[in-house]
Amino acid sequence: MKKDINFPQVAGVSLAIARKKNETDHFEWYVYLINKNEHPLFDVLVSSKGYGEKEGNPQKTSTLRHLIRYVAPQSVEVIEPIDPALFHLFNQYWVSYYVGENIYDKKFIFVPDSISDENLISISQLNLEGVLHE
Image 1 (cartoon, rainbow, N blue to C red):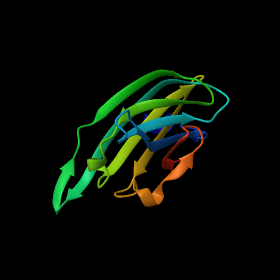
Image 2 (spheres, one colour):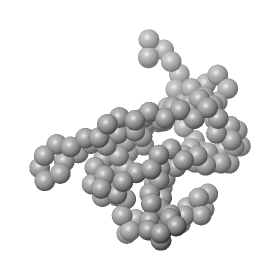
Image 3 (cartoon, rainbow, N blue to C red):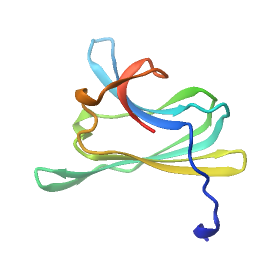
Image 4 (spheres, one colour):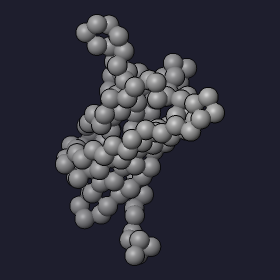
């Protein structure tokens, strides 16, 4: 049963949505997984979806799932590109991974309009500006 499974506290793992300029000098946005730990992460499963409203009408995106077999210590992995047209939605990323035989699980939610120029910070692990969720 789920209540019998021990889910340890997630620490040292963050998500960021950051922008970088492409070769045509336009910004492209990506979702990044950041492992700040001194140990690797194994079998990282990320489920992403967007949901909310636009002009009073319910709106949701498809659910996407990504598997990253290995994330090295002190490293970054790109999860997916994200379209700025989705920034008005709740953008949810459910991350599960293994460290040894322990499974870790955390839901990261970027609330509507939190991904904006006013909220951008410098994210040292990426050398980019973005919104960091820890």
